[in-house]
Length: 536
Image 1 (spheres, rainbow, N blue to C red):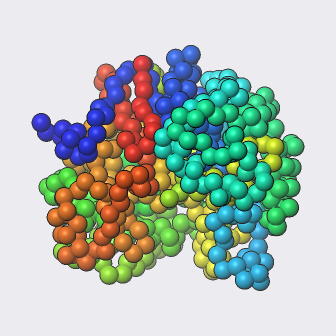
Image 2: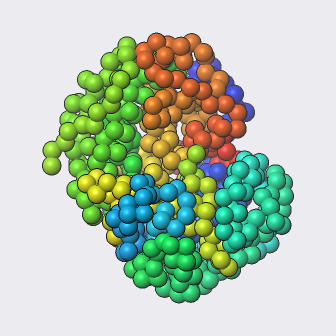
Image 3: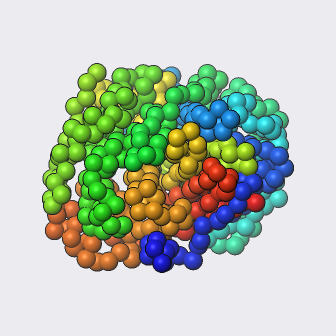
């Protein structure tokens, strides 16, 4: 059968169909939480925030109120996409010179210097006030219930928890994330009481109860106690921003991303470059298709690392990088028979941890929301008495004062987390995303190519075996024909393979597709994670 699931991945999952609403995310308990909100009269935004809060509890190493978030929102009445930047900024006392004088040449992945202001809570509240229909207290109630009364730990999450035992042991307060004195095993029943108390404070008092209260003071005091910069004033000054989303057309499908400081722009540039090749004619999961998509991704990454930063603090050539004309100047660098030995950035004028939630409601509204503390358990700093895992997003700043992404006070860092959305004409087509640090834009590229070029449905597109472009190599997922790796090596690619449990690092996708004529929703969920798509 054409496009049969077994052609692409050894998975028994099939696409989920519904019409009244659907939620797809990486933990079933969180997916059910979002669905309950929909069934109780909430809309896509209400359900997405509820699921994100639940994920803070049931997948605490990946996300939480101590992290950041971004969202794309589709308003089906207005036929419009809006973008919310809920990422935090560097503390006001942040200083390149201070670190260099201490002999620190790059911001560490853990510890106090890696902590920026967490943006999640203000982002949730901003979303709910603008597009939600339920109060924060209603939306956070299921997450509070899981944290207070407990939840069973899923398989993959238990492994990630156990792998981070040493990190959680760095500070005494890490014990708040080590229930019963250790990392839980698969099936263990866990309660997180200090996190429950924090979520309850937020539910009752909103974002002010997080940013302008005792919680903010505790966060700042803990970071400063260990030599960091975060101050209560930094917390109190935090705001989210509504931005104009960026987009490109890929063979008749308009693909939307949040603008920088995120890396979504790399996905759009890669799509523009790939559009100039006959990817469909090359065949799904062929060496030819992989080679051209890999090279397109390498070029777009080079440009993203050169130009992407906080556009409110630096000059970021967004219009140029997303233009077809710029892609036309980059595409000739791709040799169909030979990999680029070096990847120069273009000249223009003028194992991370994240959760992703896709929700489409019965009215056709959608919310594509991504939430993260960056690395597993972020900075490794759990604020005593709160259960808050502080993220380590500031580690992505450069300490080169001349770089566009240089560390500076009140500046947002280069960000990896990117929600996606696609429309055809004035109708929603896809609400999608893929967690996984720098896998995210290349995941978006592969999902869109699978569906647009090869006609896959959401689950097939997610099941399909992936490549992952690294600094010096290309990783292929186990299960691919060995001849593909041999072919790519013959073209000059340094090819490796990812096997077994390690495949969780090759992305975690969720996709919901909507038929505008019937309202039927088709959902797919990542088989490399624990979650599901569920609808009614």
